Length: 125
Image (cartoon, rainbow, N blue to C red; front, side, top):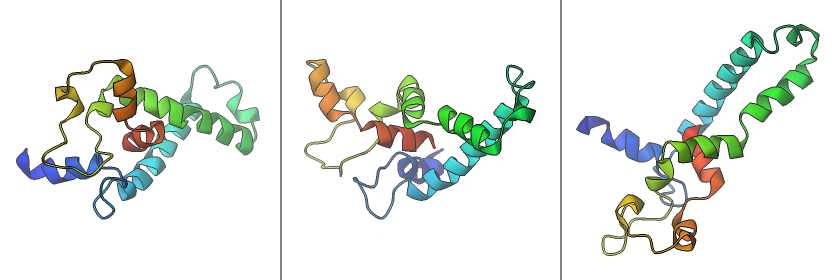
């Protein structure tokens, strides 16, 4: 709905675009939620169920961290095409267009316009 638009805009706005209204606080909350879900997945994993009880907490933390690397989160973000919508530079009425509306001449141009991997990972968090 239209009433949810400001929340969506905040969720896809990087700090480099807007210092005051960006996804930072939601990233922090999302990071905690992801850790909880990753922990639950590890403890309930059918592949690891025979080994989990013998693993030290540090080993479990390392496994959980491997599930939530920035590279993995970036892959999820690009899979859902969020890279086309993340706002990483301030908007300029005369210059900015959503990347899905731009005509791409080459992959190099797209790579220069694309948000950084960390920003894409943060949006998933």
